[in-house]
Image (cartoon, rainbow, N blue to C red; front, side, top):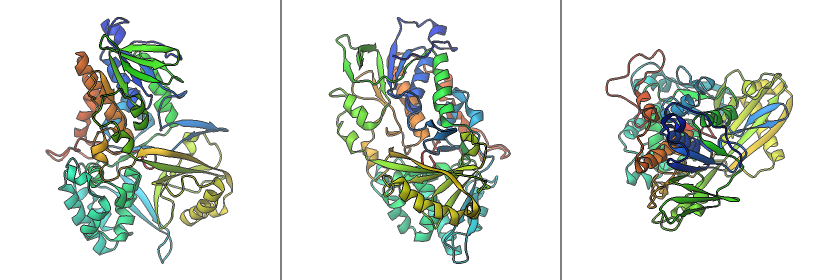
Length: 506
């Protein structure tokens, strides 16, 4: 087994004397959920072993080398309201490497206008909700005046919904939008522009409950809630290197290239976790793996209806990577209308490219293209980039490649809420974590971190360990104003607060 070096952290195992004879937890899975759970448990004085089958940490938010470039498998961003993920960045000393915008500002280019290419912007002012978006919506050129008015009325209706209402989970967002007067153009130019990137589904395929959560939290809860942040370094620097350093410092034993093969109850009430050539005894086990893998490891009786895990569908995300010999995009990112292209990001500096410009196209809900050959995608997307970015027409393509995540997220289809289990199982000492569990959020980095916190909190309660004060510090960040915004509106805070955008704009 590959071990992390052991270190100490205030409040960790060596600091409070727990040592080898104390409580032991095994966390299965080294994605954001598993790393979060391991850190939280270790910070509370629990001895922790983290198992990860891959040779790296980070789950589906990772980097790899391609020649001289460091490439992220997909573009991942987060929002100011993603208080749990922001806590995670602080915990691994990575916040400065993934800064936030001062204020939401998204360039949106429509290439299908009769008068030609047109640029609009979605941005906010330092005003209370909902006035913070009023000027942007009033001048948004991609909607008619009538559509802008109807969008405002729909937003007010959306604000009155309770995302936790089970009745909303059974409905689809597209039908709700149609019933509230939203035209096909309004859905394309606004609701799907945001919703596809956050939910990984078009409005007609998405649960109204999850959609309401995204829009209420991100756009209607707090003026700065939707300000966008993203890594200015490769994701591997955050979710692998810095995460591993934090785990090492906390005294967590990290075993990479080590996959759990079985989880079973021992005669003394503790747990055995099987790995090749070894069985690990544990007082608590956290399964922070995808739902199908969790289903395969669950012992009998752990869930009332374990087959529901297999009913949680998955949705793909495709990323198209293009390296040009010169600069062709002036913005750090932009969104597109009237073209198959969804979002384009400048990854030049983060990748280490010295000459030219490296663009990453993030394509969510990519069921129709996820298995298309690279040659087909090249023929489809290079002309679309020429329509979208005029400077590409005289530029040479130095490299073109794609990355595919066929099971990037769980599918946020109507009814998925009843399938998502909570952190606790019916088997004492066994807990679940992962963005697919019942966090109330779609499959995002925020959801993953919150699930890890929830599983660790449940385990600490059962183990009789006090939870570290800093573990829930992210709940307080909802009260902090964005830079230059002044104090919050009295009584206004992001509702439970966090939508992160992973993979697509996720």
